[in-house]
Image (cartoon, rainbow, N blue to C red; front, side, top):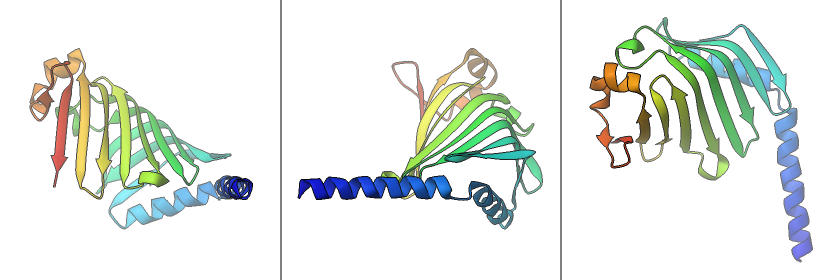
Length: 177
């Protein structure tokens, strides 16, 4: 009985990986790009390369209402169906954001899993320092822990006013609806 259950589990896992491997990932990116256009969000990029379980996008630009929000030199999207990861690297934020945050971000990584698909975790590093947290879509909650850099403390103290100081020197931002 245990042998049949474990064999069934192996077949299910292999089936999921085969679907993720054979999925047309480029077409999925074009579909997402098309869906965002209805919300006045424009995704543009130079090249898109497909690999086993994901895609690599060069020079991704994100526009909202024709205003450039960010430019990511290197973006990778990995989808294993039960686990998804989006990594944006070498990001430059728009001039609009420079009032609130430093413009250069080393990376931002978003992760989600099938076990808790309504909770998206993220971590980031840049001129602002280090940040990690999550967005819970069901609970409508945002939680961020920030370890601010010297630049962030000196130039962007108004932004830091939205955070709560913790004893370990980290700052916490919480929003729930």
